[in-house]
Image (cartoon, rainbow, N blue to C red; front, side, top):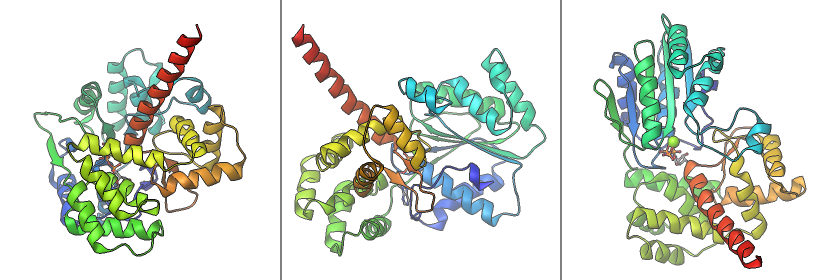
Length: 352
Ligand SMILES: Nc1ncnc2c1ncn2[C@@H]1O[C@H](COP(=O)(O)OP(=O)(O)OP(=O)(O)O)[C@@H](O)[C@H]1O
Ligand SMILES: [Mg+2]
């Protein structure tokens, strides 16, 4: 059952039991009403919902017949076609095909999305099932998610994680909260230990929290930079870019980028085609090679380690390791690739 959940991107989920209980309560007492887990990018919606489901399923005697989890951004279906085509957002029929596949159904043969939804609803009727739609970001994606919510809510418990605020007449909403100062310190300490950064004074963590707040993704990226930067320099940078969370994030990514070797930068750009739910080493290597990258396994491994040490690539704690990029990292890479393309375009223009 738990195998349908995405691999954890956290070593340990940090937060209070009472946070998880907000979701547990809905699962036990919500009468099957849809639930929207909301918050800005990187705040921890996917992790929160994953952890809440794991703990709830472990503790509860209830076992659903089906637990379906689909992520709005998905690779194209096969590795070959995925790599041949430019990465694109998950369309509605891909989402439905993914849900169908998890039920052993070929919904793609049907002519309309409406019919596909009806087929999914028929398969779920009479079962007790949970359907998760993860990583909704844009208004278009919210509309897609709402169609699924409307079609499946009467036959399954539908859960959605979304950056975009969704209004729904019968649904409940649980906003993800920032980590408290205590929990932010705990995350920073754990990450510093995992990345073998040595002893970091508590005062540095206090300053990180003061400037970055309890945003787990920002904290993870920022603390990893202490392997390269003295704390004072890191803090000065955050301070200078604290005007908006957008400029702060951009600065944190740009700094991480600047700390990479040119070869690791190329590897990161090459991993743009990595599926959002992650890939094992073989698929990672294939993805990199299919993008035209050429290097030995040892070299690739050492550059991937460089990326992991800066938290630019997420790795699971358990073996076999799953490698994945966070959605915000994809966004940053799109920006970087846009710059590269623009630069190449300019050169081409000049040559003409
Ligand atoms: N409570 C937590 N404890 C430990 N790590 C966390 C926690 N919440 C989030 N993280 C880590 O922070 C990063 C961002 O979390 P996550 O991907 O869940 O955010 P999100 O809100 O789903 O982002 P997006 O809007 O981009 O989908 C991940 O690396 C995750 O492992
Ligand atoms: Mg998410």
